[in-house]
Length: 185
Image 1 (tube, one colour):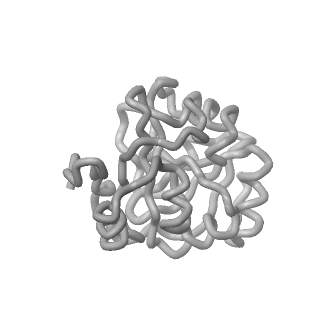
Image 2: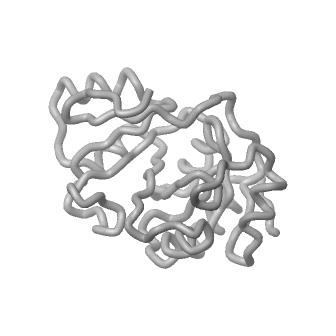
Image 3: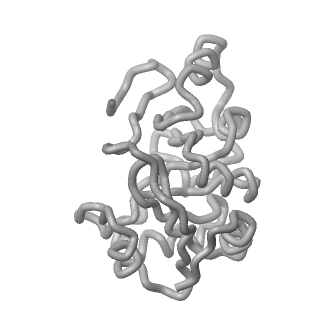
């Protein structure tokens, strides 16, 4: 399996329509170019996951995140500046330019601006949103050790962005921006 530590090499891999096992703030993720629907479908296939299940979109900056959303209020903007970058995923109405495959049935999208340096370097280099989901087979726990993740996703279209995970012990918090209510803390 290909392994990249250089964000430029990993970015080229993503841009070629391939999938990366990547570090996050806490658990291994499986990601691809958010606008490459074939790669998104392949992630679902590899995870044995339903096609209707939504992904989290990872972006490098708050301004990039705002491009994914319908316009927000000043209060919502202040809130985002308090929680991002960080280990919090935000759900809000998707803007019209977002492919329907990335939206939930209620036209929302889940976005995170990570503060995990290796992931941030990758996203900054790629200059495109990346979908991400935990690197596990559906209904099974996410392996903590990279070698176990690699066993689950050994495929010619999958490579590893070889950096370590952050120290978070649980998945990201999830907040609904419309109401500023946490769905998961």
